[in-house]
Length: 407
Image 1 (spheres, rainbow, N blue to C red):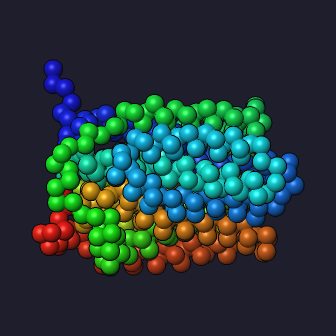
Image 2 (tube, rainbow, N blue to C red):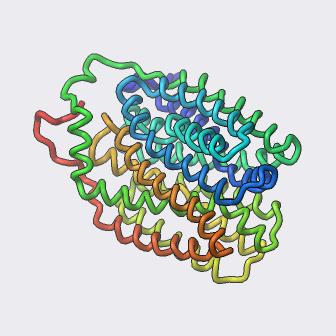
Image 3 (cartoon, rainbow, N blue to C red):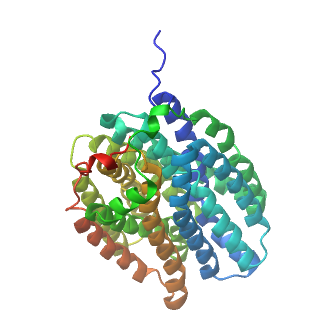
């Protein structure tokens, strides 16, 4: 019987995929249900939607801002250490979120602390290990598997979280999820990389890597596209339940819609990973953003019924995180795997700036106009912009002088 073949990271591909996928499943699964806490929290605390939305916006911004730092630390000292810290902070943030009695403490716990925790327990850190473990011809597929795991977390955790809120109350549900987040810690120990003596050869410094990436037009265009991705998915993820409630559709329809997004996201991200191995990733990304814009236009133009909601959820779910595998695959394809977690963190920072604006403007413009219509159409316009921005991206490895070649 053949045992899994260890790679240069000292880990088998199967081991990294299993542990990494479980970590992403829990981390992303917990956060995908935060929209269900909006109504019970603002009702009990007497807050506005903007108060809750602002905390979620800060969470996304903190996640993005801390992402490059988490990536640097993971690339330099080991991803497992960052994941352990992320799991512990995630649990603490959920506990403090449950007991926060004023907007400031709620923003600091649900926003800042959980956001930082997510930067150390999600895609960028896991992808860094995958990039150093999986062979180049299989990276896009491996990234798709990890992204599909996050989608599976959404599909599984959405009904669990709604059940917990209805049976334990919104605070009790947060306490139990805090305990769940602690499971990230033992899983992180399963992806401890072995550092080899040859890893330092041909080292590219952090400064060199950053100057190279930010001076490269394709990297800038990828960041622009990811900004749009964040705006769209976080606006929909947080505000869709309230949007449906405003139109007379109950919590069952919202739960079903978010479950369908998670279910079809599994297939979409995995398919994106496979297609990224066969077709130019820039065309794949352009198609995803363009189809999102079309799906949103149709959704807000037809009569809102449970059937139209479920159809929209299935389509947008297939496109939900399907940008993640090809975007990260292009980054590692251009720049190599040495600083992948850090560079992926910077790309994700752009995603989270978009997330901040999407979730905050959703609440802000709703309170100002009594409708989400302006934000829906803004999401459409941004989708078309991202479709065009990804077309000129160059996917070939960047040319470096011999002194700047990374290991």
